[in-house]
Length: 266
Image (tube, rainbow, N blue to C red; front, side):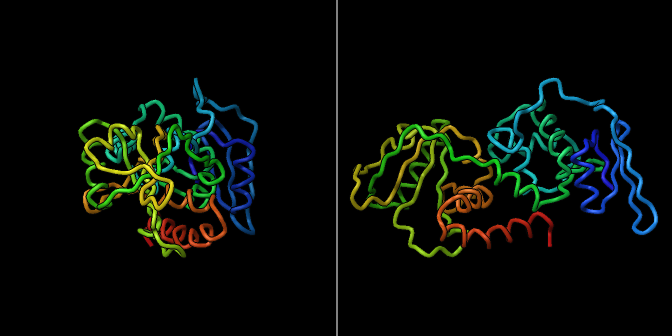
């Protein structure tokens, strides 16, 4: 049984489709006992409306609340979720976390009882994908560094010292790609800051690094570290791949399976 603050008609319809009982704290509910009972109560107003609802909990900074459930599917409190987002490189207020959770509960992807837990990993992934938009890019530079591994480490060190964000996009870390990684995309909040003391040639011919400047938090959230550099998370990599070309979409299928397996502990 699902228990949430409010179940609107569309949420009750979805519960009916799934054959799952649910009640809310506003007076709506659904009880299903296959072959014996079907009771549905609806029409009660939401007694827990948000004073300033988030327009879209699956996009932008507020999507960090949804995304963190793929890193840790169960939490004991709203504060713990907020702390985990901060620990993984995100930044959002406690009120935003609380409001985003209400939206996730209403969509029946997150449940709240003794714990706050992920109910439908596959549906949550679909909603993140449905609402995904490419990052807004300010600048792009294609460069060549003589020693790319050393250059990436210097980027990371410069980012740490300056407070800039940096994360590399290398899908082959998670899936088998049909093409080689001749050019590594590096996202950063400041190209100027991370390239300090790095010798490179800006060129459109035979580059081995593409620098992309963006403030989009979702790119830098929950990175993985390897050899002194940070790499974009599997979840963000999946969203980028599945919204790409045919080959990218094909390899994204395995990454999706891995994400769902990790979120359920299977």
